[in-house]
Image (cartoon, rainbow, N blue to C red; front, side, top):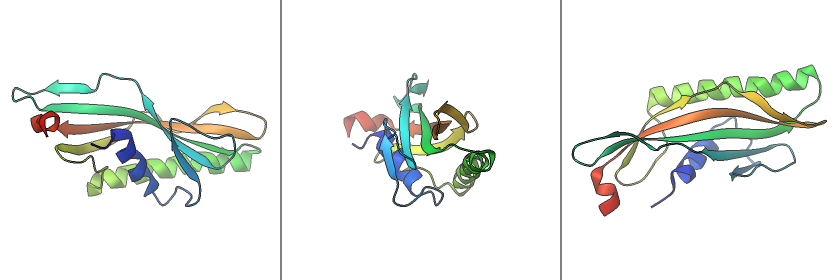
Length: 145
């Protein structure tokens, strides 16, 4: 069984905004631009428990990047990336092109829970990030499968 974070990472890697040769890590963002990471966020994964044992679940995560951080023009480019990324998320939801979670799990929606923002800035680089939530259905057969 593949981890949810792996499915999310693979899905984000398909975004045309993500630079092709950049590293897309998991729970790790390098010090040099441009790099990306998908980080897990602690939460109670079970949203609803159904009588048959199936569940509606959630996976909270952060998508972040390390970018050049310099003048207003560069910082506007960085912020625009996250506006465009938010638009891409909306389109993927509308088209129902969501992460493939494997047998007995079905992604229902990816929601943006915060806009993109600077999380940590240094003299020449900054970590920008956006927080998201994946809601998915997990069939009762998942743990028996």
